[in-house]
Image 1 (cartoon, rainbow, N blue to C red):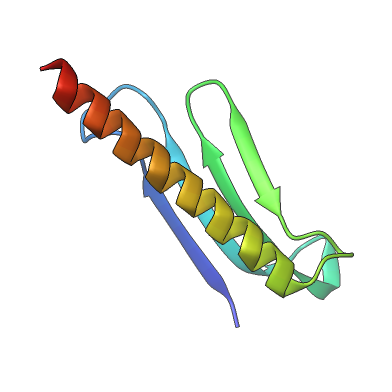
Image 2 (cartoon, rainbow, N blue to C red; image 1 turned 60 degrees about the horizontal axis):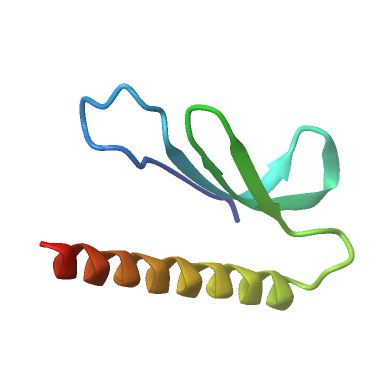
Length: 86
């Protein structure tokens, strides 16, 4: 089963090109295994967290959940900091 989802991260009308892509499915370079990754990009850089051939899907899911938790914690901290500076 294939999963593919993309979203722009910047507000509508922004000249910046921030985006996120989540993908699990076939790859044109490897017919026998699916590729699984989460990619975050902005105007200048791109980071791809991908499931390696030697790691289990369970471990990759743990990495994604850890990343999501840290991102959420950071966003909360920034919101509190911004609120306190007003």
